[in-house]
Length: 336
Image (cartoon, rainbow, N blue to C red; front, side):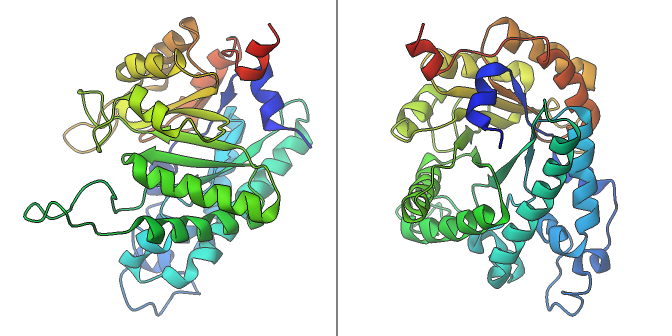
């Protein structure tokens, strides 16, 4: 089987684009979201995109296939919110294993189909592990700064459940993404290391933070460099940034990471910043032109798209990535 660590040394790998942007195009109703299994569910579930892996699996399969056709090497599972903590909003905590397992299985099936067709370009599946809707570093109550809505241990347990189900479903790599609070990410990384030890496996880990505004800091107050330092005790396949900003605005923060690590560096920026209607206007060619700057500056090993990106964006990015050289990573630097 193709090894993602080996592929990373050979070329820039392309991550897929936004899942939510693609799901919106289907205009699913409440009934579509519920499907057969949840037709009598007692709370509204419209907007719970992760459950579509159970109720509308063909649509999710179709989205993965479109991204692979566009040139993606890595598909993210449809599991950004598939933890007991995030699923509490829909009272669906008991379905977390099924959500993760089915999402991983669907993505892996499509990846295997494309790898069989194009063995020279193996496709991989990244288990998407989102930040949850709680934060460990800050209080949600302005009148009680010491209060926390969740504990480290609660997050660790939730992430462990998610990790186990994603691995059972067949993912090749785990992607802890959109990290706005590094302490949350540490709970996820701790859980992953626990599972790796218990199962005697060595699954690659991608880690991706998010810079929340022009200050260049995460929501919990860290610069990109501080974020990197605080997670570098874990052996990572890649560390990088996604979401929040467009490709151009990420450059200085990616430079800070790329110049301070021998891990792979990843980026999947948004298609620019949202307009007044919350939509993303940046065209595939505009986005690709900005990302060309990443390649020119030797910043990147893995590149993809976040909010507002479509298969057309990924195709434009994949076309230029194919002509670029990846950054050298630790093993290559040690043999120079």
